[in-house]
Image (cartoon, rainbow, N blue to C red; front, side, top):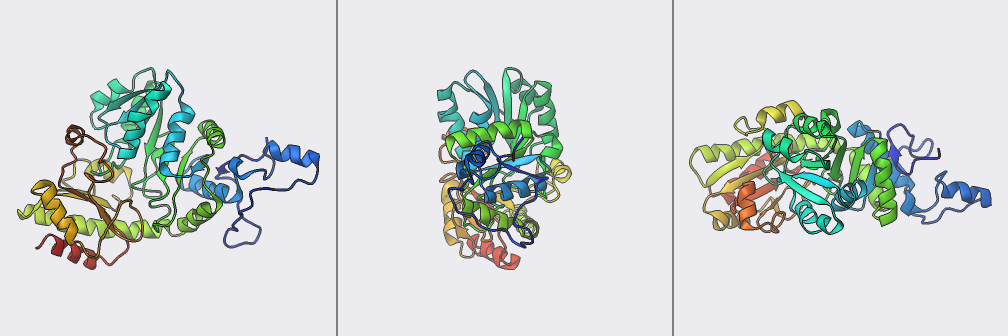
Length: 387
């Protein structure tokens, strides 16, 4: 077999002797003769970037090594990756079981698009063992969950869900965007595929859009073929930026986690004192409902947290508007701390009833903790909360 069209953890990447990777923007690769052209078209060497290119394979190989996977396939965005997983592995007549607790964009894809292509969607509560087992029964082919979840940072017991999925003959896909490797490796907990919006922690600087899925060759070959047909490959420049960012991934996320733990404790202290905070959501707090699972399943509890302000949206808006050091913006995982109102952004597409069922209060503020000094972020929250 020729070179795989995606990156595998075993392969060597980069030019011999180069300390950093080269950037290859070329959209064509010349052949020596007709036989060489035939070989290129069959996957032996470079042929056409939509089929794969050096910078994408370098990023994929690095991700495969981080996840402990056979390989990885990168896409143009996180949502393009989920679209690839759902539609690249499923066909009309198949059924997917998806957690109730997912990013709003994922929910929109399930709600508005998969049904149009004849794929049935089942939703379930991943924190209920009885509901999980009932939902993943045949003819379910794929089970999909987030862990930790957006925006309430709940932690799913991946080994339990994987056991239920595999017992029913289904694959398990996990969106692990909120806690990247090495702090969490879902494949080691029984998942078949792990998905990241690379725009977030993997990129880490709010300057690149991308997505990636890691797993075993059997599924990745299908996903790469689907990517090639649909044209959703990550471009060379963005793949280069993502590979650059992986060099600092662990040191960034570990620092962010330590700051997030401090801020969560500060906010929880205000809650216990009877201030304007109704609840704090962070899996590193001992009172969090998934604290024990998070401790067992992750090296650190992540740098995402959320808190509910009393008096609903009006109260949350007042606090949000007073933030000074923390940036008011969407997305997460970058060097700058950002805060958003899920009601207006990540989960705006849900009805009030759907948000209530998911436990997403109108007064919820979600924070992605960055690399700023912890005392500056704590002081900003204190003045915004007027304490």
